[in-house]
Image (cartoon, rainbow over all chains, first blue to last red; front, side):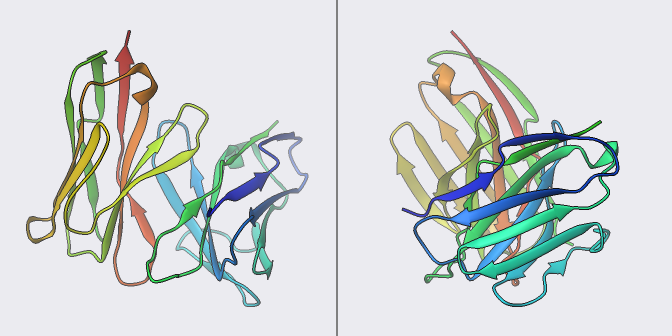
Length: 116
Length: 108
């Protein structure tokens, strides 16, 4: 149980285009989803927290107009990188939680974004 | 904010060897988890351990919350143990703060 999927697993796009990444909880309802970014050989950094049906909360330094997050249902959250630039190239990981008595988060497999 | 430091940053072992990874955190926490990130990037949850000791096969973990550290023990290491090990702490707002990571390579 507690499986989280991401799609696509990798994507290459041209500079200036927008890219959408999906995060789905497959066998549980996720009241809260989190988006992380990981640069090569670095740790995971939290970008934003989203709750179903409400606006995402962004961490300090993360541009909310560039990284659009939509948590439309209890099983789906999307991250859209708008007007992508090469410096946005990174590994994006989502996680989901249903707060079932613990604060455990379940992580997706990640999406590798390369912007040319 | 809270700082989470892991040591050593890099570790190379011969297959069959034992190792201890350490996670130090600068303030009290509600929760601590250990993860293994495999070469494809997937994070695998190893332990949910805000305090005490847990064991799962060749892996065990101990958290001493009052002294603000946690240890992950790997015994009889295998090549499949290679990857990056992260600890992550939760404080107050249910946000995970990840440590700096330990990159482990196990040689056959």
